[in-house]
Length: 134
Image 1 (cartoon, rainbow, N blue to C red):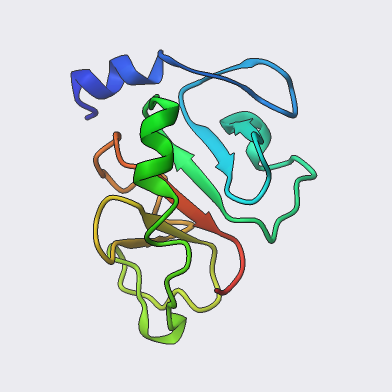
Image 2: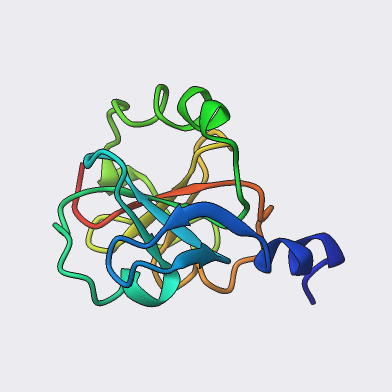
């Protein structure tokens, strides 16, 4: 069961609007790492026509924009990752041919696409979603 602090965070807005449906984003926010100021809500992320080769950050907890730049962009985005040797920290299967989620707060913490929605991880941690090998 989710903690009380997480339950409260789901109802908070991110002070950002979805670029697909143009509604204020509540709950999970997806921020493109390539496009300037491009955000999607959870509902639109799966079916939007945005470039699938772009990595996006999955943010469950609202964060301040000044903090965002210093915490999320600099260290993991240019990191070389040999995917054949990287496995999911939940099911331990290879990440070679699946969508990957990389935690931006924990060193070397990765989840497969089908493990990420159900894995209990700190909701204040943001994940980068990779839809293609890097």
